[in-house]
Image 1 (spheres, one colour):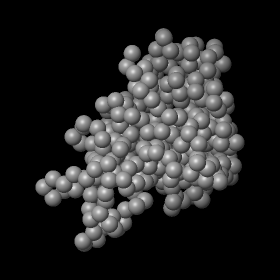
Image 2 (cartoon, rainbow, N blue to C red):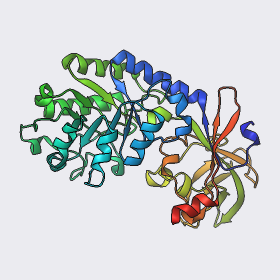
Image 3 (cartoon, rainbow, N blue to C red):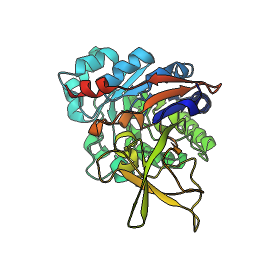
Length: 376
């Protein structure tokens, strides 16, 4: 099948775009001498993992479900970070993980010895209190953050037995942002490095974005490794793995004109199927749209849920939209398919994989039973 033959709505993932990103990540990994692992929180589309496994099997998980999926579908090193572990979850985490990071000293005190006894390498998340993210909802370095231990809280003493330090302070950030945070990390926590085996620079390294300075990233990573050659360095980006590898194909169902505002209602929902557009918020690119210019028809896009705020806009088009027009909402793979909901019982878009020859196959088609079985 070709993409144009498929009924909308559907997410489509392109194998050639995946491989482009994977090859870049692998090159950075090799030239910098680090391990770049995939974060499940940004991508859990496991039916596409046969391609990922050709490049790297290591991953990071933040829940038992992510961890189990990684064990089953990737099978490499399993790095785990959760804000909190419990008596009901810790033993299964330890049975499946290779590395486990604690968010607080109290969590370490409670489960640290059990982690060592299980042969899992324990780490501690630290907070360098260096803020480089403008959108507050994604900024773990805000004052009062619940994430990580500050240098002040450590008070010059790293508990015996901790083998790694982990920070996460980036979000779709540049290598220059990393350099800034890394400087704060070294200044505040460098006194503990001799006690460690590994450090984890977290996620947010958007090295596959056009214009990202990968040469500078490699330079920064090489510089750190030359200063601390005994430390293994891990990066766990989410977006970078699947950046611009897939789209959401929708169809215009109706045009609503109210007080001079035209809304093209589509067969998908921002609230249900593209939640970051409302949460972050941001306006996705639409392949069929054009640069804004006087006289061109302008539209909001409205989702097909009952939420009043289920719309984003505006976009301009060369010609007026009409029912039946297809629209391509770009870059709807990473942090999209993992965050969708079935609010309003709206049918979930199909998920399609397009191979390097342009042939499409369904990875998943959703039914009423998927909705019903989520509810009871």
